[in-house]
Length: 87
Ligand SMILES: [Zn+2]
Image (cartoon, rainbow, N blue to C red; front, side, top):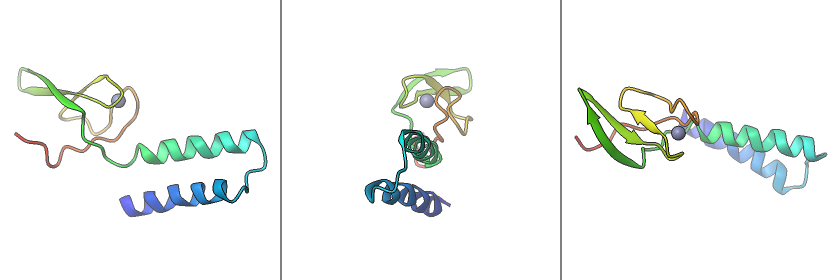
């Protein structure tokens, strides 16, 4: 899954590098696509914030608060990686 996403990102980057962009509009679309794809790759939250009841809250890369049960940040849409988080 992650590999396919990385390949898709690569695809858009290659097109841009080769100057295969027709205009600013297309450039913008490509950048948005890359941005959206990057958010599909799980990233660990920046740091632990606090425990609220049974829930642990963390700081997302965007600076907002995310909870341990959330798969995606509800603010920036970043997919979150909880796998190797220390308990
Ligand atoms: Zn976020």
